[in-house]
Length: 261
Image 1: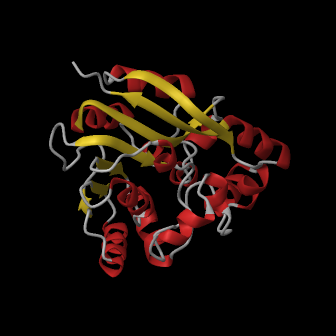
Image 2: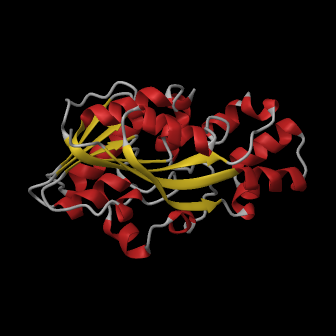
């Protein structure tokens, strides 16, 4: 269902995860206009909930792997930072997203970016490949988040770092919402509690796990989003309960290190 939904987003160029289709959505997530203007047209589909590249302190020559790369926004931003001697690998399970990202790559002449079809629970990437793993509002969609973090640990070089933006829960959701398909696709009902999310990262072997940024979705975005409206209709929620929902979900950016030994 997730693959189908995001395939439709890629083809229709409409927005998805937890946001409205307003052009300022990506700016609200943490991108500046200069960054958005520097990437190929169509690379930004308003699907992020943070800007992990901005906080990753990427260096020239590094190798970056992007989990759930979509149309390529974060890959293209990372490519500029790692330079010609660096390398960026985007992995996505949705063929339509992959087609879009590859076309963006060809059209703009990026030589240090490639996109691979695969699931983030079983990455088509060799052990000890990446200096940095990034991801943006994707891991919440995985049914096996522990496996995702285990894979991130596997593909990172010793001493490598992970910087991810994602949606987490601050309060438990009602059961009806947890079982709602639109809420899952909209990056809400698949989200883990913040404390559990951190525990899963630590269980994979990561150290120095730190929440470096946390933000609540503005209420107006929750209320205007098509996904949220579908959930509200399904659950017959009031503005008050929608406000509770907005206060129960947060966008976080988390960093972690794979130990050198």
